[in-house]
Image (cartoon, rainbow, N blue to C red; front, side):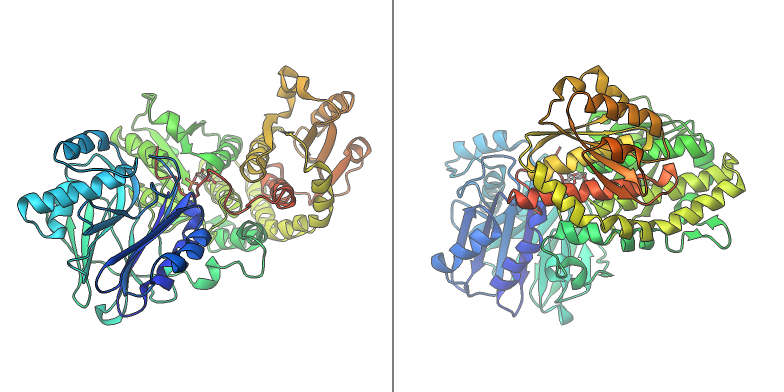
Length: 617
Ligand code: G6P
């Protein structure tokens, strides 16, 4: 969380940094700030609130000239989100300025030490401690900036992506990473450099980028290029320049009001992109290099442990049903944050699947490091190419959803389910737990899903009407059974995240063990009641709700009459196999939460207190 941007080169730094911060706002938006060097002095402007607030303030406060600068958009960890705690932070002398994404865990002891040496602090942040520590080391040992940063980072415990600038050395910026991502865009002839948490801020300027690895730092010098070193032992690292595959269009709204809506509508394409080249229906095979190369590991696995957080965890729950149902492999699904701290029993015969859109979630990353240390084989399912989890995994498969910017995850969820379904089918075939005709039916049906998602999206107007009726509800319940129980959880999460309405997801049959007490005429209840999968049982649950006057929104199969006769509203989705139904039933629930949030005038793409990439524990 937190987004960082920097620029050094011949262009005006301000517009590049401010536009870059807007693209990184998905990483945090509690406060924002910028530091520009105008050739003589450092000009800093920062404020609580969004990048737009910063933009409104900057031109009143400072001159925006200068070809060097750094900027930050914050997701608060240490210190409340206010102007003072916003980044950049300037050292006591006024010479050094820093932006930081991460947490310095031992900042308190370092701070006390610096206070005893006469340093004073304006903010409550760990970052202000770090910039003064660098300054103190620089002063004490008369070190160059790069060296001082290196010595300081060797005293620090925690996680960081930082960029540091010294106004007395205006031709260089020093950056470093441990646990938080950092990309460097390289202009032609080494005459300009862009620094950012991901490549989106510099896509229109260059397609050449270097991604720092953990425990690496780089000294970026105008006209002279980049020098990368290991923070621990100072050894030189060869610079590996990658050519970026994403383009600007993919990270723009493309005519939609919000990224979330655009991403909901991108799902047919995202799902197709995810199975393209992997699902070969004519040959009746599934080809996934990461699975093929490690088939023995999968086939000999005692069990599969899935670790993930948030929406990705819900995709993991859907996968549990698919893997057990089709491939007959026992599966456990764990919150990565719990798994990593509860001394889990893991051994060499376990396969751990880590699911993460961003590939940067700190808890998921820590969980897979733990699993690897115990000898388990780790398979990553990530969306962001080259992300930390993708690199840390022994093997993996990418979801090809394209950049997901809306904080509430949508297309990442359905593409994760697509990848996991392909894996389950491939393993089922290898194990002989699925007949060849069932296998073919699954391939055929999966290939039809994008068209069916398009059809499900056509219910938008109906969903808008329903949203209007229930937008002022204080609570919502979501019920589903079997494959659709995780979809109920995900539906409730979506509503909570962006509308701030309290919502709970439950297995439909569990309702009678508690939640039924909540039901009265004010309670809207979204019930997933598709034809395949315990339909009659769910219909009975709907009867129970009806007799308690709850308001029923049924998610039903096209042409359904039984639930239509009972429910207050129905939303139809096309028919498909039960195992694939989550890919369709989740669509109306995404739209329902989207429309309710818009009607309540909430910030759909940047809901309060959340961030897209959670790089802290
Ligand atoms: C955050 C996001 C969620 C996401 C979760 C896991 O909480 O707001 O949308 O599901 O992190 O993220 P990951 O990138 O690991 O899938």
